[in-house]
Image 1 (cartoon, rainbow, N blue to C red):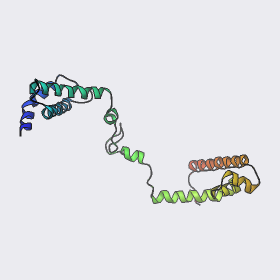
Image 2 (cartoon, rainbow, N blue to C red; image 1 turned 135 degrees about the horizontal axis):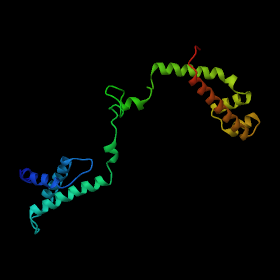
Image 3 (cartoon, rainbow, N blue to C red; image 1 turned 120 degrees about the vertical axis):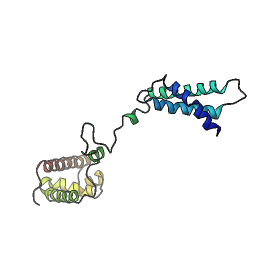
Image 4 (cartoon, one colour; image 1 turned 180 degrees about the horizontal axis):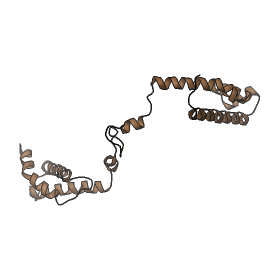
Length: 191
């Protein structure tokens, strides 16, 4: 095929042209690939009715393609891809055989039976501690809030105002947060 013969004939020219350019973060083979793309475009787009020879047109297409690749690289469009860290490789500085980045960032499995058992125990401990943690008003506000009632509906039901309901819910959130934080610091005890 004529295209293959032209590529074989001009391949040395592309290699020579690539040696006069530098692609940051790439190597000479990358520039040769860009040059070959330019050569292919020259083969595809060359018109015999023009006054230019194929050699001059091919040189122009090859050079432009290489310069375009260098300019694109200088704009750092592919910087994220070039600097990306493989998720299947150990983290930087770790030795082979250690956890991969995927293992590090994946977190616990959703359906881990041990995690589900611990979560169930934590929920039981929280529910059994609610009467000790919360005042009567806070317990009633929480119960209505968990049933999907709005602040206005809760205030009307309790004969109060929305500001008082909001304050009670803020205290509930803080007390439950403190309880959970304390549970994280203290080792699990038998329930």
